[in-house]
Length: 568
Image 1 (cartoon, rainbow, N blue to C red):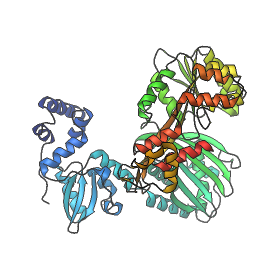
Image 2 (image 1 turned 30 degrees about the vertical axis):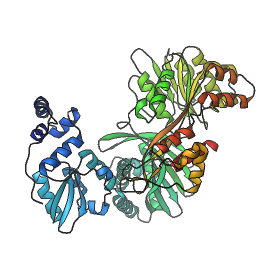
Image 3 (image 1 turned 90 degrees about the vertical axis):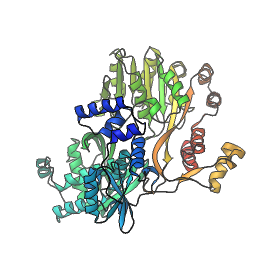
Image 4 (image 1 turned 120 degrees about the vertical axis):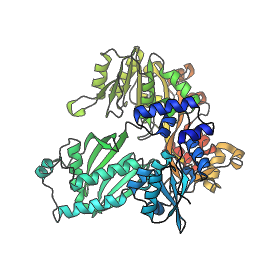
């Protein structure tokens, strides 16, 4: 293709009636004041979308516009252009066509970028227009640091030589050396984990090797393997960062620290545990910048959002969110807390650990080492005249009773509990030793939730259900199971071949109505469960998962997995 012509983006958008003259002049003034790119000013001002800009450029220049969400990218071809240039020019090599290369760029009018890309690829270049956001997401996904991490692990092995022990004093003295192999290796691990949206990093010594795994969308993936001898310096460096006792390797330790990845702060919760071959380290990554704390932004259905909002806006009572570890309970509670947060209300949280930091809220970290447990902090918090209290978890009878008494005396209390479903939660409180009258008098509602993986939209396709899935579904839907089309992801470059990308929640809500409260005072647990299930009218976690499968957002296999968890 011929070298592209230089065009003016603003004029093109005005000519194609996507932008008014007033909007163009306003954006030009904004660009002059801030120095931002004009296209970014248009988008951030809400005048046009990225898709409209890309489409307009493609029509003007007579070149194709490609939606990268539905383009199965060949990662080997993409890497023909070095990552630095790919990021600089917002460009992806999409196809090797022999004499030419098809390259997707967000700005096809950048003549310098065109010349540099052609020089680097040593071939003719055919351009296609792609969205800038999608280009950057693809670059983050494709230019993985696996090779770099493996190389740095080998460098660390060579640096250690034949030694099998690490000098604590030397490591402490050199803790600020950013060029040390162990530091560079950890930085690369954090960078790669952030690129692939990992929620956890597992560093695990095995027999003769060290494996590093990432948890992505709830599933562990092997990142790299290295020599076992680098396990100790890695664990020691991480313990130094978290201000843990580096001389103690016999006992588990917990801590936290923060790292900067691509200019963003990521809070890291670290847990160490002695194992047969060394210390296992697990880190939970909490990206404070990328988190939107709002009930209607976490995947909760609109009708449920309205009901749950109405419940948490009551002046007093206990509201519980239940589910296993990693089911999104804390995110749900913090989303509610963020909406309740105002200058007129005093909010106090009692947590272990503090996962999100919210302005205007008094947050307290539990510390069992100094006997600063949930019950003790909660008693003190109630003397601080709060309107709303969040208790990280109802771990024991004492904490539960204090929380319920607070709910009875004019406070709104939000907390979590580990139970399988909503209906069994009041019974669990009673099993913990909480009197029936306190449960029926204070508990307002229980929200149970799980996370299911979402089908990758780039490779979603209809498929025939296997016999076990169809049989399970018939029990839920009857004959309708034979007529509804179901989908799965075939696997592509966008989802790393898994067929899933991202997660969303499934929910069930039990409100403690008069009938349910009366049943809570009944001595027969079976009677209570019967009344509670009747109150929920079939809106269970299982039904929520089936509904997502019918909508094509998740698979029947994921809905079945949620059902199996409930039966455990």
